[in-house]
Image (cartoon, rainbow, N blue to C red; front, side, top):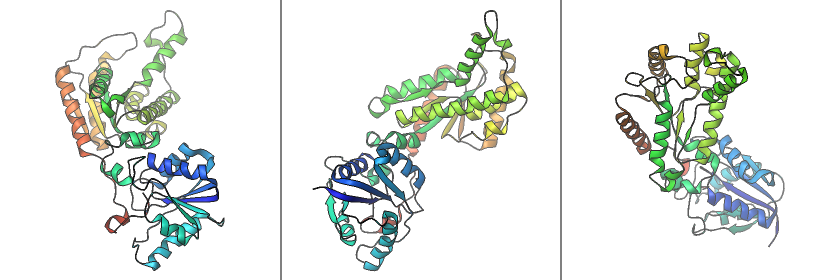
Length: 361
């Protein structure tokens, strides 16, 4: 049967393939579709992000409306139902609703209150075996049921920082390989290279034959570009990777490099600094300096390591200093990452957690 206006109401906490399948079913059956995303304000995935992820997947074909619904849940209380319905009706708009699509038992009652036909899709989760509750309980186990935006937001980010030629690239690459070899969902583990090195190569090439890295100059805009590009590269890699992402430097490290070359870090760079889940600082002591033609700061390595230690402490972020041999450093880094992953992901419980059944999926 073909309907004029189809409606879906849910929390999408977070959006997953089951939600997308439900929306696609409504699209196939309706001339137009409205999706009301109605979480409680206590939940820990921002409403704006949920809307962005859904719009990315379904584009302008579907109208998405976001609204917070902080009313209690009680399926046996008509008065409570009407509190929710006031929220849903206002969000759905004035157009008549012809069909309500849902993968939950409450969809029948919801449709009746809209004076619409109920369309229940995959109630038993047989076609797409996933739910929001399952994702929140075990993101890793349900990783393949998540879209790129949700994966990018959930991925644990481990950033390796350190002075020149202290092994940051080697460590980031080795960690990504270690987790890829675990197979399964981890096979897509990625690492993000240092954009500043790429920019150095470009600057050096632009100077022409005979130029050396000591002829390369840097300005404030260069460092702002490095920080922004590094963030963008990390975001792109996280969307396509596993539950953990390794980065060789980040915008925070860029503040130290800017200080080294220009005497201090600018607001344009600091405003791009994020707080990853874990920093790994590679101690320069015991690591020979390798001059590869793009390095110019052997004499500043001790100073840079000290600045990293001081600033990481001031930031108050979780970090570990890697010392000893390469194998010792890798073991310590893997152990810290495993501990990070073992802590899992914390989602604030929806308001309906104590009710008989939640509204939304």
